[in-house]
Amino acid sequence: VGQSIALSVGGNLTQTGAIVGNSLAVTSSAGAVTLTNAGNNVDVLSGSTTSGNFSCIDADGFTAGAPGITAVGNVDLTSMAGDITIDGLVSAGGSAKNVLVDAAGKVLFRNSGRVVNADAAGTVALKAGGTISASNTASQTTVTAGSALTINAGGSTSLSTDVASLAATVTAGGLTVNEKNALAVSSLSAVGQSIALSVGGNLTQTGAIVGNSLAVTSSAGAVTLTNAGNN
Image (cartoon, rainbow, N blue to C red; front, side, top):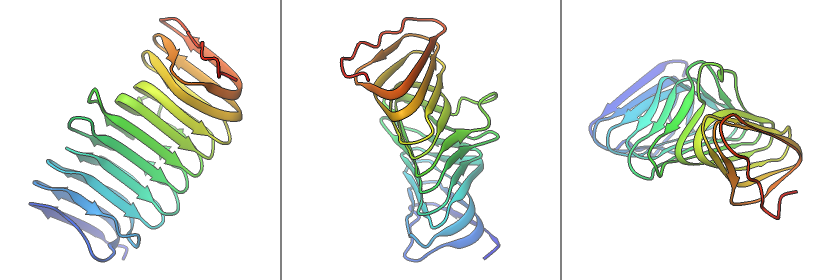
């Protein structure tokens, strides 16, 4: 308790009991990291794998600290209570992998924090009981996904992105997305909330957009929002 923990393994890393400390740094050179005990409680987490998934559950929230969390596989970060703060690179590698950040509280991006899954079929999912926000959008593209970004938030959400498609459900506070390139909206629900989309290419949709207000800007393309379910 209150101390740093560093674990380096040459295969899979698993657990049958909780890990408790101030910081946890994990490296696997030939396997997966699976730390999914609900009693885990660390303040700062970092780590990497070269040939496996990276999964971690924490009891009350944590910071994904610099240099970050990277895997040649899926990345799954969950807090049972509290916030997840992304303060370094969180990255999945390999074909058709996924990054999931699932916080009972907020998901916060700061400093060099960003989520990257650049494979053409790579996806990112952000879930929060509260807000999803970034204080570093002037210097970072907070989310990069070769394929889809999925957002499910209970509070205001504001991100800078480089993704192919977006599906989002926001139940309070509104949604703001500044997309670097073209964007296809597969679904967007912000009932009673404001929506602002800024894109650097064409804006299209395959599913309905529902909200109180919609503000759209394209700096280099057409806006084609012709789904009959838009409301």
